[in-house]
Amino acid sequence: MASRLVEQLDAQTVAGATAAALAEHIRALILDGRLTVGERLPSERSLALELRRSRSTMTRTYDLLEEGGYVSRLHGGGTRVALPYARGSASADHDDSAIDLSIASMDSTPGLYDATVRSLPRLAALRATSGYSLRGMPELREAVAQRFVQRGVDTDPDEIIITSGALNALHLVLATVGRRGERALVEQPTFPHALEALRHHGYRLLPTPVDGHGWDQGHLTDILLRSRPHVAYLIPDFHNPTGATLSDPERVRIATTARSSGTRLVVDETTTELDIDRGWSPLPMAAYSPSVITVGSMSKIAWGGMRIGWIRAERSLIERLLAVRPSFELGTALLEQCIAVDLLEDMPALSAHVRSRLHAGRAAAAAGLETIGLAMPPTHGGLSAWVDLEAPISTTLSLAAREHGLILPPGPRFSTGGVLERRVRIPITLTPDRMSEAMSRLRRAWDEVLGGATASAAAEQTRTAVI
View 1: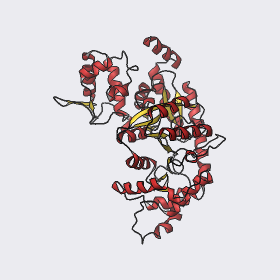
View 2 (view 1 turned 60 degrees about the vertical axis):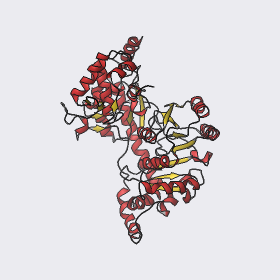
View 3 (view 1 turned 45 degrees about the vertical axis):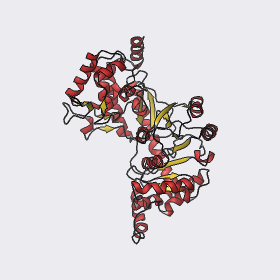
View 4 (view 1 turned 180 degrees about the vertical axis):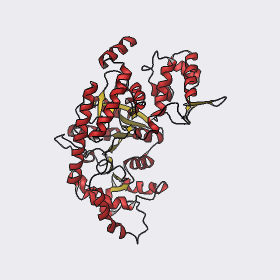
């Protein structure tokens, strides 16, 4: 079985790489959070065997990483991931002027301030209570349930729990229904923190491919029927990062197949309301099976600083979730809940703000990519564009971008095993001015990586080298 380091590196991508190139790839994994501080790395001998390289190359690779402060080596204790206390050159991570494209989120809706002021009397009325809100305020659960009804699936407030964001909701679900050692189907690419959550709860991940054109339905249903994973984590609307949306017939097929395989569907609807010009609205996945667990949040439609999320599930599971929740938190902040109630009373205003901002961000991203010579993929909503670099240079480009004050997660950050080196996620959530500056920095990094060559030429060089 391959070590986690080799899974993240992808042996094919680093085939024939020099010690310096290998060190750069591992450095990228550390900077990107795919290797964690303190994590033990394979021995030089083991890594040499896995990559089919000489031990001297592995020794030199670790030497370079140690010199830079990215690993620590202790006799008898192995090699472990570290971070340097100080870096020889300015780093985007510590630069206030850096543009962070690892976060795909907009600033707050214009109505947030007024909603906060209007929510204060509602909060004041709660002062006589304990202040703990394990299930969530009745008014907010009613508002969330009503939104599901408006989208086409009957929902009772008793089928809703309010959480501290969607990721918090996912952890609560996995803490309740999770089984360590079981399999979990995940899309590839997908939301990186969801992969981390599933791994944290002991799941073995089974990836199924997604791109801008959608899902490989045959592959997905085959995994469900053949491997019978315990859970499947899906983002069916404006998928993060590809922007794809599952059609209604595809949803029916997946829900039906999951029931047959005994797989619990965990559906992330964080991006569901981020429509620009899709032109149609599918039914929620929950409409096709009562066992579907849905998580959502206010973070993308209102503001990331509002840590308000929710879970929609069967009443029997809701009771199990409520029994588990006190083990790590006693409820969700009441002020944020009060504000959310007010905001959800005017969904058309929220939707209009989202559509306007994303439309402008998409146009700015497309213009910037054009100056680089890259194509903007069809993006009808969601957080980002999933851009084809036409060559496996995503990690190299990410490292170069940091030197220009741009934090750009490489394609493998969104995968289960170091693949997707041809892709990069470009958020469309920045203001046009900020996006223009980000694209200017990306263009400088791009020119540096390619040395003036075109992406197609780089791809041909890579292909020839592999052959």
